[in-house]
Image 1 (cartoon, helix red, strand yellow):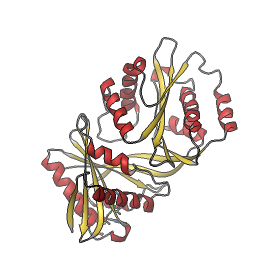
Image 2: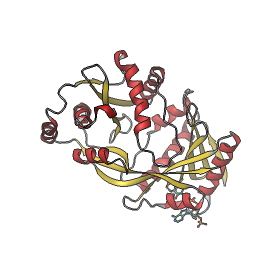
Image 3: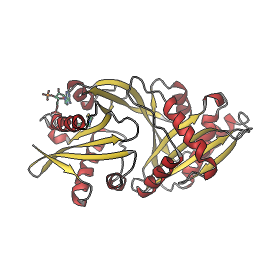
Image 4: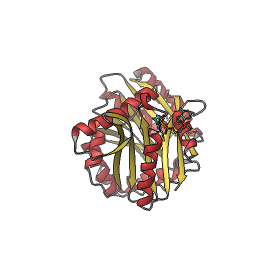
Length: 332
Ligand SMILES: CC(C)(COP(=O)(O)OP(=O)(O)OC[C@H]1O[C@@H](n2cnc3c(N)ncnc32)[C@H](O)[C@@H]1OP(=O)(O)O)[C@@H](O)C(=O)NCCC(=O)NCCS
């Protein structure tokens, strides 16, 4: 077995790396998710202040056995390397996964990082998979569990009307603001703060991970990266009478993967809870997303198993759990 470093410059090599990753996901997951080719390539090409990515492949002659993707966070979590390892189904249980893990561990240690972190998909009820068996056998401990939930779009207009009718009158004093790829200057300071609060509020189990600290500059950098990746994003925020950005939600996807859409963050600031603002921002945002949808798609979302309120809101909207996503870590 031999290791290849993926530089992101050699287009044919990168396409092979990406295809291997996508093939594994399609093989192992009923509802596969993941970045498209361009989305990945852009991450390799950019020199961002907050993230550096690295790719490795393990080959046997002309045959590619598996790949590893390493995320190096550069502002927070500078003690952690996030690693994803995937081995082609035809080449498993021959040590390729272990080979890649050893290479990732050596790189992390050489850079002075002390924690290796990984995210693994498994069975909806037990969370188990080849990935979790591998992680347990190779020194990782399970730290956090989320449900991967999906629902098929488009949602019928009558259903959206019905959901909206049920929350009518519960937060009339708030007004809604919507935007697309660029956060309006008027809201960017408050939005940066809300994104940072989101990082602190979202349950993370026993996971060793610092929340991201957002600034207007970091939002602009993320927006620029998103556009370059061919991604799009719909945001709906609720503004309280005193001008506070009290709640927001974001949904979107990428032009290269039109059948995969995502429900990203939803935050209702603690002091504004209990007024159905979660649904209050999600329903109009879904309307905005659907207005441009001319094909069937699957909307994906993830919630910590202990995040009962958000799971309840999502179930009410029509999401159903299809898998567990677990986070594992080991100290190096
Ligand atoms: C997890 C994965 C990377 C393992 O790759 P691999 O090349 O088969 O792994 P290895 O051959 O190095 O296995 C090392 C050990 O892990 C354990 N293991 C791996 N797959 C297992 C399985 N399906 N069932 C039980 N134990 C397993 C075993 O202890 C194995 O040692 P053994 O074969 O001597 O018994 C591969 O199954 C995969 O790509 N799965 C989908 C992606 C994924 O879940 N990645 C997360 C990994 S962090």
